[in-house]
Length: 242
Image (cartoon, rainbow, N blue to C red):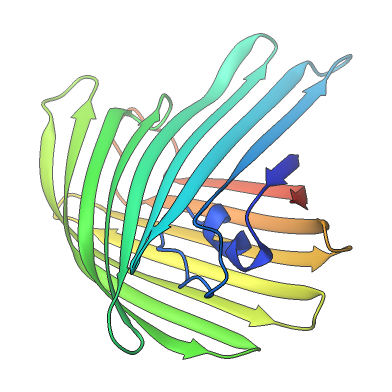
């Protein structure tokens, strides 16, 4: 997987994150920045398969507001048959309050061909707090209410109230490496959706970093036609920044 990231290293956790507000930007952060990620793997011979992962993110700052816009696509096929097809579009904002407090809101549209949903639309907002923020450790927690519209293929649509909570932790092991752990929980009266992202980032030089990550999404009660409750992705990435 090859990653092109054009915002600074302090945002490596934010661009990878599918469900958290980015950390507060430093005073010298650019007003507008973004990144693009493209991964492609092809096997031929005894096994014929290909995997395509594309992601893009844009971020801009306006006073105490931080805005993020994301788009993602994933496609996996084997022997000319598609086994995974996912799309995501999301917009998010964070407003800095006095001290370690902030407010956030986000809207997310997801389409996963093999998860039993035709599409899902979520809108969530709430309160966050920066628990730790120093040169070695950072930890933030956030929570709030929301709404989700699930469009099912073979059943009536579901409109659900959501209770959301999440954490984002980063440990700067040295000047050249750090570990990130992100987790979120979305609770409804129909199911519980949990997400986890664990990543190790090692800086090779001022421009390049090597990143190993493992992402898990679990649905406690997916639609009946779905065979698995848990999806996981493990990847090794080369990050380039300018």
